[in-house]
Structures are given as C-alpha cells and as structure tokens.
Length: 170
Image 1 (cartoon, one colour):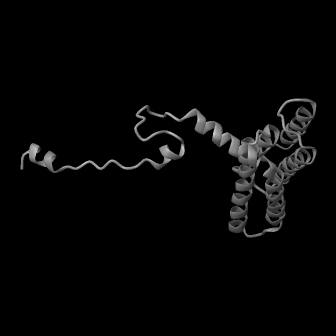
Image 2 (cartoon, helix red, strand yellow):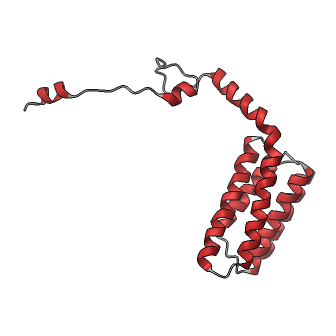
Image 3 (tube, rainbow, N blue to C red):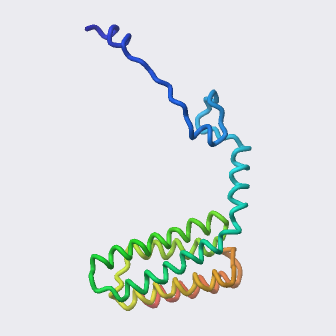
C-alpha cells in the first residue's frame, strides 16, 4: 500500500476542549494560552467569596495536624510512622495552599517550611521534634492573631523564632 493510500484512510477527530470553555475562551479562539480576562476576574471573585471559610478550613487542618503529630511521636512501628509523616506533609501542604489562595502569606510561608521539613524529618531525633514543635507553635500564633502579611514586626518576630529553632537544632 502506498503512503498516499494510507493518508486517505486517516481521520482526524477534533475534540471539544472543555477546559478552554470553562476558562472562558471561545472554541474558535486559536491563540495559544489565551484566557479571557473576564473569566479570570470571575474566578478571582469566586475565590474571594470563599475567603470567609479560610479560618474554619485552617482550623480543621490544624486539629488534624496536631493529632497526627501526637500519633507520630507515640508510634513505634516505622512503617506506620512513615505513613503518618506523609499525612503531616499533606496537611502542611494544604495549609500552604489554602493560605496562599487567600493571600495569608505568613501562614503560607510557615506551611511551606513545615512541608519541606517533613520531607527529611526523623521523629526519633529530639532536634527534629523540636523543629516540628516550633513550626506548630508559629503556625498556631499566626492563626490565633490573624496575621496575614509576610512582612511587619510580628511576622518578622515569628519567622525569627522559627529560624532560631531550626539553627539551634540543626
């Protein structure tokens, strides 16, 4: 069979791009990466409307985070402990993501720091337990005092406390 006969049998199916539609682009808009600015504004308005749920969501995650940390410290089985550490990392990542979505930059900073530390934690080491506890403490204070910005005297003091704990126990 010649190449021209093979090409005659090929059919191209054009699929409906649902993601493009959800983003507000028209189906006949061929500009790569184009997203309708009105759709972006609408999406941001939806996010802003949900900000009232921020504290409730973070509080629920903090309860699970504290509980998981308590369980990790009491767990003797290394396999189970590794699973729980993965949960701890997941909660820290959730805190970071939710905080940054609503522009709670300091909480996002601490969530990210805890997330990165969970990747190398050894909860059998006293120094690592102290660093985790320092993260939990500054996250708790940030939550209770409703500090939003990553700059300012209170934010710098809390970041300094965490840095000091990490330096002291590293």
